[in-house]
Length: 135
Image (cartoon, rainbow, N blue to C red):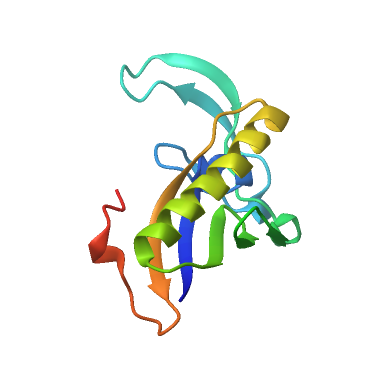
């Protein structure tokens, strides 16, 4: 059976997208200068601009193949398409393939990345999220 496993690459901020705990502004506003405060202590820790969303032209939209999976990557979301005898095999194969890709990305970029599973759907469009712990 064919399965699609959807994952989100963390940290999303490296893809020009909002990330929990970070403030971002729309790209058409321009730089907004202001003091940087530590949210836990309220202490001034720097001065500069706020992060901005990535521009639409900078959006990642790529398709490629991994060892056992066909991959669509849109921004920080990975859609892993593969054939497997069951959902558990599909999930583990996708996690292994995407894990390998993220290790290569980490080696190239010098950052640590991980994939958070969001959903698993079979070829009948039956959602199987309740079968696996996605958190």
